[in-house]
Image (tube, rainbow, N blue to C red; front, side):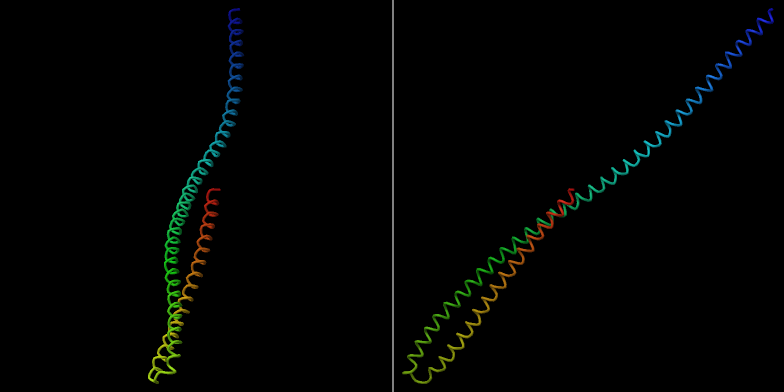
Length: 185
C-alpha cells in the first residue's frame, strides 16, 4: 500500500507537473504571440517616429530656406526703395534744371527777338555794316531755339524715365510682396 500510495502520489505530482507544464507552455505561447504583436506595433510606431523626425528635419530646412528668402526679399525691398528715392531725387533736380533752362532760353529768345526786331527797324535807316549784326543775331536766335528744343526734349526724356522707373519700382515691390506671401504659406 505504501507503494500504491507513493505511486498515486507520484502520479498526482506528474499530473500536476503536466498541468503546470501545459499551463507554462500555453502562457509562453501567449506571451510570445503578444511579444510578436507588440514588437510589430513597436516597429510600426518606430517607423512613424522616424518618418516624423525626417519630416521635422525637412521642415526645419524649409523654414530656414524660406526665412532666408524672406530676408533676401526684405533686403531687396530696402535697396529698391533706397535706389528709387535716389532716382526720384535726381529726377527732381534734373527736371527743375531743365525747366529753368528752357524758361531762361525762352525769356532770352523773347528779349533777343525784340532787340533784333528793333534793330531791324533802325537798320533801315542805318548804314549797311549793321547787317552783320543782324546775321549774328539770327544765328544766336537759332542756337537758342535749338537749345530750347534740347532742354524740352531732355525734360521729356527725364519725365519718361521717371515714369518708367516708378512703374518698375511698383512692380518690383508688388512681386516681392507676392513672393513674400508665398514664402509664408
